[in-house]
Length: 198
Image (cartoon, rainbow, N blue to C red; front, side):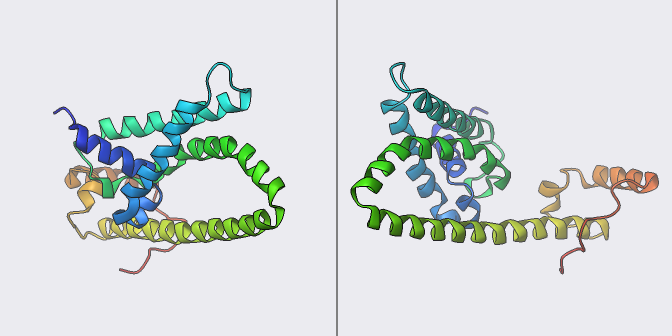
């Protein structure tokens, strides 16, 4: 059926809240809204025909990511809740983040010139925060990969759980037939690392 506006908006905000949407679902939609506000402000105030080339490029990057968010919000409403927004979609938000940074740089340069001491301390604090953010996301990505690999290992070992219909295939009998065919042909029978513990 047609997606409801509310459900589509929630999915779009969940998308914009990646990767935190998957790590902390309670705050993901709020983070998505926090990302959406400066993005829309950037489009309203920058990137017009009289703006510089860097501003036009930055706003084009923001538009790209916002369009992918709208597409996800419209297309995935029937089969997904915001808490299940795939982490892999986060890569489509990189242009938005870059675009917002490009638009913010002139203001940061002025602030740095006006108060260099405070700007240096703020830069160090921001760098530490970003490194901490990356460390947390790396741990979460590894845990997610472990969970998926454990589901695949369970399937290979003959166990069946409800989550397999979402992770492996909706028809597990068909998935088993494909797996048996791959085994006969000797394809995709090893992993790059050991299976995680149950």
